[in-house]
Amino acid sequence: MLHKQMKSTESSAAPRSDGERVVPTKKAMAKDLGDAAMYSACPICHNIFEEDDQVVACGNEDCNAIYHANCFAKLEGTHCRKCGLKLK
Ligand SMILES: [Zn+2]
Ligand SMILES: [Zn+2]
Image 1: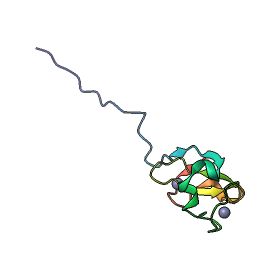
Image 2: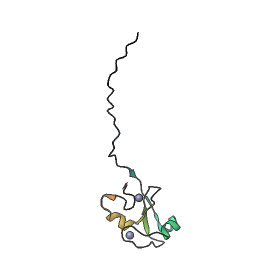
Image 3: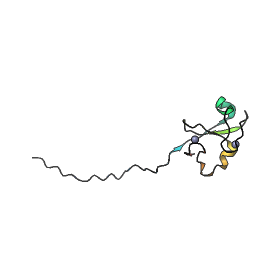
C-alpha cells in the first residue's frame, strides 16, 4: 500500500499579478509608417505628423500609438498614453 505524503508544494515562483508588461518601441520616420502615422495624431501634443518627423511607435500591436520623438522624450515614466503599457 502506497502512502504518499502530501507535502504542501509551495510554489515559490508565484506569478506576479502586478507584473508590468513592457513593450518595445519602434523608432521610425512618420512616412515609414505610412497611413498609420498620416491618419493619427500624437497623443501628447495632438498634432499630426509630418512625413519627415521622427516618431516613436508603441510596440503594443493592439495600440499602435505613435508619438513624436520629442514628445515621447517628455512622456513621464514612458507609459503609453493610449494603452498604459510601459514602453522602453
Ligand atoms: Zn507630439
Ligand atoms: Zn500603447
